[in-house]
View 1: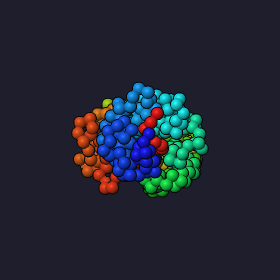
View 2: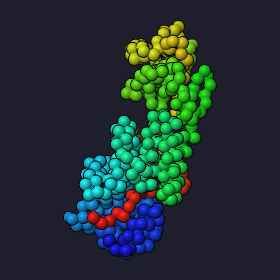
View 3: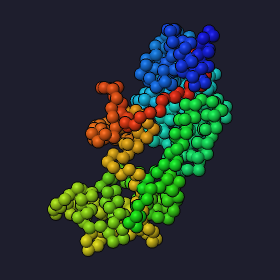
View 4: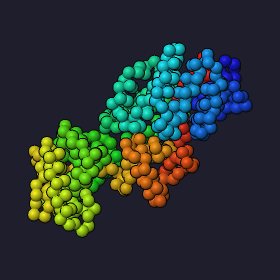
Length: 406
């Protein structure tokens, strides 16, 4: 590896993409193309970065398996930054295996962390946590220790273990400061700020207030019967009844919970669950059937009693009822929540992350675009969606060491 390539690689590792480009911008050999690709990714031009890295992978000869594997790892992180969740995990795993077999443990660990971050993004927390637990972060360089701690914080936050999340964010910030990379420090600071932002709204006893993540954790650990409209489950102590796949039942339950001890009228239940403004006998018959199904589903936690006007929710053991709703209860709030990181998303990636169909996501994006809440970038298969906020955060890749070379 010549001196200019070595200097450019060190500049990238220190978070100085412009310094790296000063050294290799006019070169077309494999190592220079790879370093230029990483530099452009750090500067936020993901399309050009992808093109350069693919060219670099082709330029490396058959004996340069490590260099090609490093390119594939970088392409995997670019795909993650662009929310291209269709990037094959198998290709990333194979690149990581090649790097580990040749003793490049840092970049092999980097490949593993990208896979963990992808699992975290699509909600597969248990698998992400298992993979992360199998990594020894103490032997990693500071940028990768920061990435490891950031992934731990993400898992803890989603599990509502706020003390664990705070400790992980602190570890991530300490490692970022040791690395001395300003972009990484900003990224972790932005991510950690989520713990100080409203996570949900509590509706109880006719009143409503915003809750921080720590407040939500305390609420769910208490004795209340919580109708969780963020995750479409009902919780009572250790018992949890999932209703995410039964939207009619959850709509009925939420209306009963919001109505309080007096119960909800049949007309309001029909309106909320079936959108029936002028109910006929068939609607009432369907309501009786769905209420019977809801009564059976809630049997461990509560009873549903008929009243003169409709039905009432009666929790067991004298529990009070609380409704936990998203902080923004506007239409498609779950979709908007994914844009909180400031990154651009494809409709297919959003569909994977939400576990729904691409057509459903496209209709929601069109509605949000008409309301001015999201905007498209690009055309066709390259189209991405993002919130129209100025000053989007630049992508910062954490590839820790010199990319090229075998």
